[in-house]
Length: 349
Image: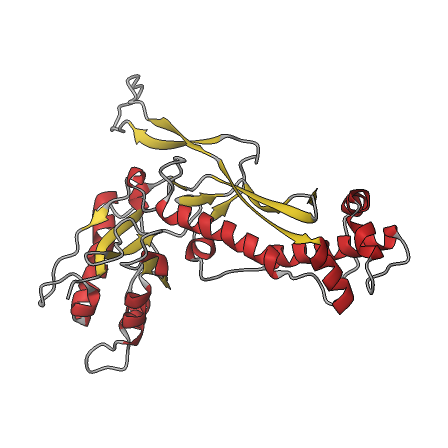
């Protein structure tokens, strides 16, 4: 069995008190020298599973690996309040001894977002513990990893599309007030990049950056472009005519501000869980999301990252409750981002 020596003494005591360790110890082929030894053994096994669940990473959940994250809020908070500020006033040329200096100030608008819990659990029956000891194998850590994954999946979904029932906001939620860019149809009559020439695609990207610059007087300079997976694959392999340079490489090499282009399947035209513009059948629209990857502009609020509570014993099962506290995505400067709907689409036959 894999060597793992650390364990939670309180969990070992709880296992001993539950009688589960006694039951396993008495089973043929799974004997221990004492109840204490059996309790410590399974406490170590559970600690090993917990450790693997914490360490597991899932890079395919794009929001978790792309958006800035913040855990500054206390896990006990029921809401997070933040302020958006606007500068007011003017300056003017003055004379000596002037007393009518114009006033400059800032005005702040508070906004509150709710904090919600996400929960899952996993557990092991007495028989699974017997089998683990008898076969000389560790408890199946995939159960803990599955609980972690399910919480991460929901967190990722909320980061993109929010959750209307709980009031949590994602970057594509309507209430974020992120501007939308109207993609012009190409020579073939569609907005999908697969139907457009390389020059038309470059014109769309330049148009998106130009809109942000115009609206913000060049104050905001988005540097990260998220694209549907199929669109990303297309620009990563399609070459600029008469060259060996792909559209993606040309953008990264020549765009003054875009530093990273990311494949996000959550933005696909059929990703109905994470893309509000998607549809399972025909008519779904893929989305491009351009934003400034800066925690001063937007953050995923996770007051309590994935946490595994102490074990609980219910009948013949040892259960591990898992929890996370999230508040969705806070966009402090909506004009630092842009949504372009229609870079891919699902058409009918």
